Image 1 (cartoon, rainbow, N blue to C red):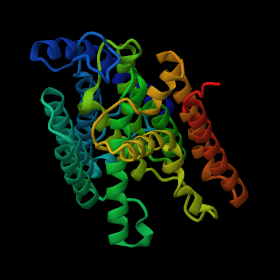
Image 2 (spheres, one colour):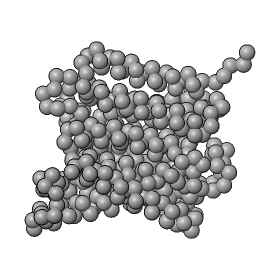
Image 3 (cartoon, one colour):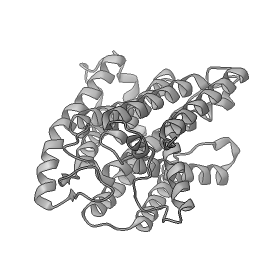
Length: 362
């Protein structure tokens, strides 16, 4: 029954996103929220930028509906038609409602900032300030933290840094049709596998909504894209994945190899983190502003090697899937296995580096 509930949740988010995306396209044209062609762009005509709103609606509406029903049913009694497998989790969802609402409020703020930036560029430092404010709020007020065992101050700093890095990693990754959304789906599926295996219904339900929202949007964003998610979508995706990666439990209590589980999110997000780190390094090396967009991303470097947009997208998605498999196994192996999985992840990133390296003329 839990599996069917997950399938139904994903299907609901897919339906909302797929229906909302065409609406967002029309509104983007009416309101002038378009991405014009340019020197660092691959499209020849303006493309609507409101796809991120369709993704957000597909996550927000079911979340608010589920939280409202959980609070109502906890107070007045759970209806008899609710499956027995679901009933024990309703009171828990009601207790988590304030935390969930705080997280959704943070997503709303980032989404609005992204919408403003898509309409009229705010500049990188304004967006970064908004990210710090939202990330700090959810870490402090909603207790979205990692490394809690090392102490409150260290946990706060590391959690804050992690959220900001992941938000920007997926923002940076949104540089080619379908790329950020496709990579996010793979990462969300891997996180869903981890959270579901630990019985985290609350986190799993949110991941199902994220997966469904992205799958409903992807047909419109697959190359050649008919709409883009914009910063309002890419920052939102990074934010949600950063939050749920903090909330997910990767190892069972008392498990011997718990230390390796700490690195699961890092291995899982290795590809988007590699893209961000390599782009920033190249920009600094060439004395360019590291916060200003350009065509130095590794997807662009693959295109310059002669790959088509779809081949480059498939290559990056396969590399992400490979690191996701490594991450899924990391919390279930001993020291030798962990070293081998880390080595495999590094090997995957080195393959990307070799693939994107410029061809030397003989």
